Amino acid sequence: MAAEMFETERASGDRAYEMWHDRLAKSLAWRQSHWNGDDAWKRALRLVRGDHWSEGQEMEEDLFSDTPRDLITVNVTGSTVEDFLPFLIRRHPEFTIRPRRPESVEAAVNQRNLLNYLWREKNMTRQMRRAVKDSVIIGHGIVKTGYRFELEEGALRPGVRINYNDAIREEEPWIRRINPLHFVFDPDAPEHDLESARWCAEILFRPVQDVLEDKRYKKSVIKRIKNGELSLTTHLSFLSDHATPNAVSSLTADEQRSQELAVIWEVWDKRFSKRLVFLDGVTEPVIEEDWPYPYLDGFPYVTVPFIDLQDEHYPLGMVRFIEDQQMELNRIRTKEFADHRRTGVLITAAKNHISATELSKATSGSALEILLHDGAPGDSPLQAVSMPTELFKSEALQRTIMEDIRTMTGADALTQGGSLKSRTSATEVNARAQFFGLKLEDKVEKIDLFFQRVARQVLQHTQANMKTNKLVLPLGVDAARVTAEHFSSLTPDAIRGEFDLDLATVSADRVDRSVDRQQRMQVMQIVLQQLQLLSQAGQQVDVAALIGWVLETFDIKDIERFFPQGLTVDQPLVEGGGLPVGVNAPPPDPAAESQQRNAVGPLAGLAGALSGGAVSDNGGRS
Image (cartoon, rainbow, N blue to C red):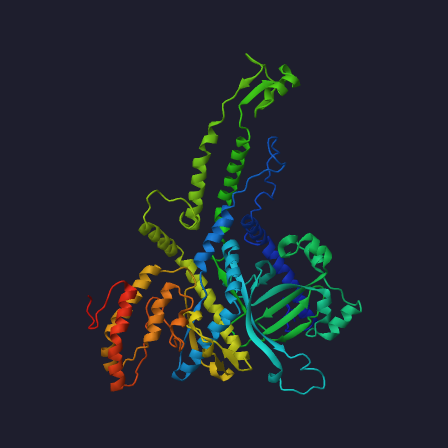
């Protein structure tokens, strides 16, 4: 019988663990040698930081320089990255949730309130912004999601019998930006992305003492490490074992010398639905458990690409497109400054026909540069040389470089603080800003989808793990207008149900704010004029919410002071349109109808005042 050509992989056991260590090491080495891997990412990060002369590109020491290394860096790359971010992420997201079943309507409202509250309360946008910045710089960003519990101290001591839920002091979902250099996934993923990968792993660094005291880790392994039977791979030795030592380094040299860090691999394996935690250098895992998040569609990691490449493992970042232009701009500007320091006349002299004393006299008290050569002295020992004509072309060349950068990045001169032509009208400025937003539409859509996918995981974590009732502040479109008396208590069962999740874009406004304000005021004016007709048709208008919807466009931070009884919007508002109008309300009471008719005049007057005109009580303009 023929021997097996390939070894059958097992879910656990020493051979399975050895295969994992081998797989992780090879995958990291593959990423480090990839054309769009560690070296390219580190180069992009250096360019953003302004470290542009660190790869053997330094020019010879200039004798007229103020310092031995006087090279000029014009960090257009870093500036362009910072210009992009406000357009991609400008605001906190406002999530809306639609129920899939009629019986889930109330749960959907609770889910929306809870998700929006947690997102702002925990400032999750901060971690998302960091991941998006990674995407712009190197090509992709990564966020990890999870759920944590904090228990009362001593609640789970041996011999103490207590209900687990009663011991929970605090619980919450969390998200965290992952350094792309500290993350690897299956190089053989069929679609070259995380969703189709069989496994992924995060590299962590922890002080050895913390590792040895962690109660979650397998006691038998920790005991063998303490006894000296097993040896951990420290951070320093881990770096020395890899081709590009700085690839996974996040510490300075001083910090590396002062800290002993253990290297940890957290592996998520889809095939066997397991989570394994390995200490580098130790074969047996310290944690081996079943997949802790069976309710998620995939890994608890979400990625966001910037520029997708067909059949490539990693997307491209914006920095890659303008690297050559950035370096050439630095060279031109450095030469300009070097020539600027030679403010006098450039002359030549035959070195065998001029003495040191004569040189000192010629340059004393003036900024002259004398170039010595081996030739004949000519008609005189000193001969003036005209400045090279290419120096006068540098300004035009720099303009060409900047235009190339704008073309390749899709940025407009307006967004980068560039100069526009004289007498540029406000209409043109606004049109250029909107056109820039349209060019970024694909990038904006990716960012919105990124937020949506992360929010879905946050909500799934909360649905599956929430144990205790929560006091939640229901958030409408503007959190500032909700007062403390609107806190409501949500039970774990109150957020169960099937749903679809969506959000208003977190990018820059797709419509002009002044246009949006005018349209909303016109809508309010029409609605207030037709209150009686709407009432007869069985439609009851929430006038306070309608006015608040209009006031949002004025960026008023304390709207609640206009509404002593509080202001809430229970129904989600659609960007650029949706009205907060109730549906299928009971027929109005005649007394209430009369009171409402009397109120139409003052409210319509308010609408006219907001829109800049007056409205008569009978609905006609005066």
